[in-house]
Amino acid sequence: MTFTVLQSVYKKDNPEYLSESLQSIAENTVQPYSVVLVKDGILNHELESVISEWQSKLPLKVVGYEKNQGLAHALNYGLQFVETELVARMDSDDICFSDRFEKQIAQFEVDSSIEILGGGIEEFYIEENGTEFRRVRLYPKWTDSKSRTLYRGTPVAHPTLMMRTALLKEFGYSESTKCNEDIDLWFRLLAVGHRIKTLQEPILHFRITDGTFRRRSVSKALDEYSIYTKSLRHFNGMTKNDIIPLMRLAARFLPGSLNKKAYLSQKRQKLFKENLMNIKSLNNQVFMKNGHIFEAVIQFEENGIQMIKAVQLDSKSKCIVEVPASEVELFRTSESVDVSLEVKG
Image (tube, rainbow, N blue to C red; front, side):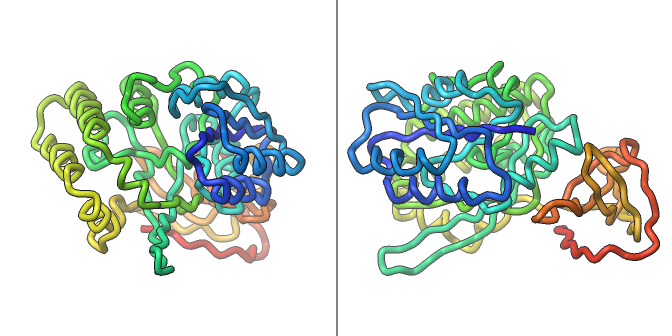
């Protein structure tokens, strides 16, 4: 399956961060068909130099316009140049894990029902004195309109998104939200029955800077709260969980220094946790799907459906995938295949 990476850049972006971001794409084990880079307004010389350097190293398709219009407009503009079945998002200061795309593509290849796929992130922040902060954050494995985890925060980290292009073009990004175009998109998709899946492992280094906290404006916070409350009440009516978005809104009004301290605190650990129940171990069993070979490791039940978690043997990264048991035929091998698997739970 082919995919395109969709990125936006504007004049205040850091040239060094953009170069690191593009380098992480170039070093991935699976390469995109193209990288659509939208220039959201006129750029400075340093950013133009970085783009010029990487045009000879990546299949860059650089497009754009003269006046800054914001991220939502830039992404909608860039979508018209995406010709592949899948589109992957990342921001101009984020860094992909080297096997990010391989792991996401593997999920789409084994499960045709997947439309929207994200992954975990490793947040990192470097103080002026050189002190480094890093922490892995995971998101809900599956999210639909009835998921309680929606009250606690976004179901997917936008820069980790890989999605079917036709679906993203159909819905697009709302340009009327105040920097909440991603949250608005998730709720519009969920409202009509789409589900969101995220890999239960980090696939992207998410850069946190002091600007991350400065961008948390009052208007953005109020707009985010409005999107959450309207959507959740439409899904579930009035519930006691309505207090959770209100508490998150209150936290947004903290001074920047306190907001930063709370964001980086130890108490803000993993918000979601995967629990696999009724696990059955599968030994020495393999299956073929879409021309790839997998070793089945465990079978478990999820939402009433029997699923198989397996390792893709013909990938450099030994991708872990999940596929409905009814879609594959298992064959027993004579000897154990040498594969290690860590099951998060």
